[in-house]
Length: 305
Image 1 (cartoon, one colour):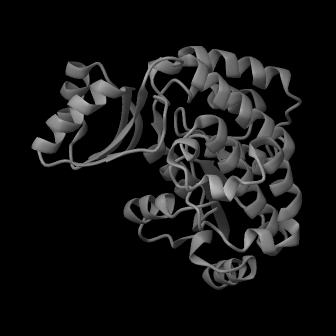
Image 2 (cartoon, one colour):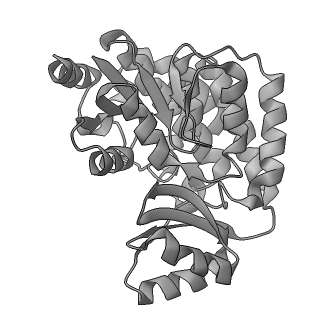
Image 3 (cartoon, one colour):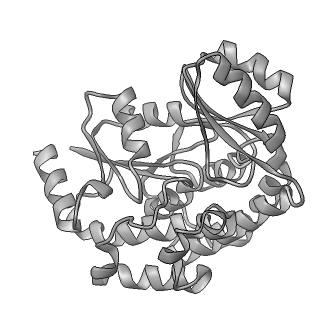
């Protein structure tokens, strides 16, 4: 009866996300800690594209929202057997696994965002989602335009990153080939070599923080392996900033840990859709599908019964 938790990354935030959060008393402390870092007007800020996609706003926001959701759900759900987080979502997943409390996770999200923004200061970089192109056909395009693989989702689905003008050129070339393309609302080339200085700096931030060994299995972005040793998790949290996220392998590791159902914790339904495409035999939902924490708990109870 293993419950798996999936925590989303940037690009899933929207102004109308999870309206029940502010009505749920258990969420209040985490939401207040988040608002102290990014502003009490965070929901209104989601209507401003430039601010909503800014690393320094989005990463603490996603971390705070996911952990607020979990705070409301934790007492209503069975102990998860395994967790995974997509990009910055890995911080929330690690916190839920026992690495640190919500306040520390928010501080780390802020440090992570600052490191990443500084790594490309003065340059326009970003990410492009590509569907319908096999890995073998995508690599020559990356080579021609000086781009890099950022996230691997499926054999014909990936996210690529690099300089904005190079992404523009690659987007035109891939569109002509019939690829399905989405420019992501992210202002940095996450998970690419552009982030090497950020990964090194964040490793120092993690080493300086008071972090514990996780109690739950965490499927790590950097290699897709499920771990719960402190040293391995810390290495992975830093390494994934400048290396491709192996989300396909993460999903497989979660499934291999015996997941009977998966729940996406945070705004959006992106991870639930990815999971359904890869592991259709294992039920999945997002908390965004429900109007309250109790409705989420009821679905999990029915599914695991």
